[in-house]
Length: 296
Image 1 (cartoon, one colour):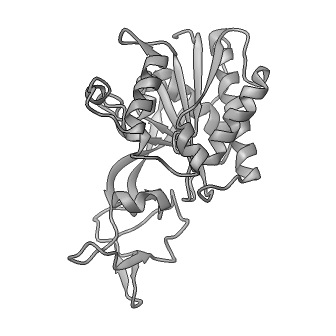
Image 2: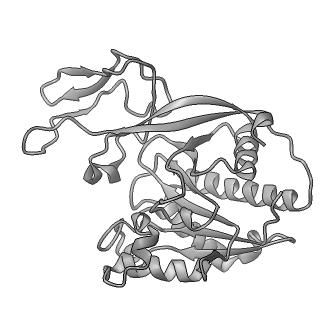
């Protein structure tokens, strides 16, 4: 198994997601909390200007600025494009990542618990996911966009992943989720340390994984205005089954709109506040059981 030499923890990629940003502040003051004997742990506040302003971003979403072609494009000069290039130069040199693991901390207004968003099926990530989900019932594992060609910050490293924590309101520090996230980080670092030492940790051989299928927008009129809300029976039911015919949206005049799919799906990021501008009401996922014995 690959030896881990350097880990980067990033918070505040979105400036109004305070959980990760303030954890970075804490770790900068108390670096011994995150150091391990066999590897170095770095910290990075991803979007300092947006954090200072209490906004998601200044000009554009930083976590959509890491396409390789965009990083090489000198004509892209928004604040976030410049910041993405600075982060790239810090974490990648001569095309080679200078860190082995990137942990990108995010919070969400959706009821996502502690969600690990993976972009690859690397054996070490799968082992980590299985271990964390076996010791912590809040942990859920998602397989989203593959890293190749990704515009996410996590794509700067083969073992990069996102932690989404919530529900947490934008621009708010929530002590419960702050502590849950901090404990999860310590568990991740401990796992990586023990992996370096060749120590085998117990974990479930079968991993429950939610694979991304598609995004769903809110019903809109011809002018693009939203005409329906998340149905009350679906609100806060992230990772719960949505069956054909189940209520999905509620129109402004109180009419239910049912899910028209042909099979059961598992919505996540339901009614995420930051996704209104992106035209996303929720992601639909498919629940899978992965036999790690056959994939490692």
